[in-house]
Length: 256
Image (tube, rainbow, N blue to C red; front, side, top):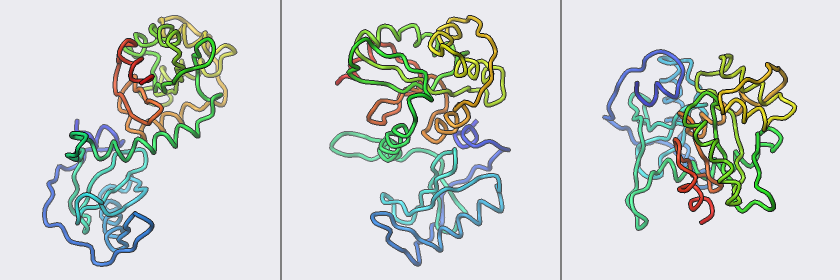
């Protein structure tokens, strides 16, 4: 399964290659972002005809490659499209700089992740705090039935002892309305949410419970932030660490 099919629900997508780029005919500067109305209209129309289920949030001219357009999809990936909307590329673009080889998408998304996470209320997360003042924090998109999530949870005391606060957000990999979702909803709705998380992460039982909860919103947030699996760890600077990483390796990354 390719990247686009992993991140966008729906049927199979065709595979295409980039060719015949059309340079923009009319551009409007909006701050540092260049908007080409003609290209935006063509790109939106092209996707709408072929995949009406895809919701496009934004279309802007690429700052790195003239003639290409960044197409941001709601709860999906960013793709690069031609001005006529006929061709697009799924994948990452890399920049060779003095700092080495860097992902262009990651550089752009890291500050956006920071902004999004700053808007998440503390009461909407399940937080394991260190004794005394925290020296740093990590955000963890988690699934209680995920083996590596359970392994990471066993190391939360080690992270707390180092002064790192662990802030859990829900990301049931199987989706909403699944048995895993129900377990996580019970944890978020529990009177003692930390104890419920401890129980579920150790394979224990939690009394089923329902309430208004932020799981759906956090699941969608994770998708928008580039989460495709769990655990997905986001540092305070917005960097995303996909997958499990031992506490011994995480600690210096958080406290550097």
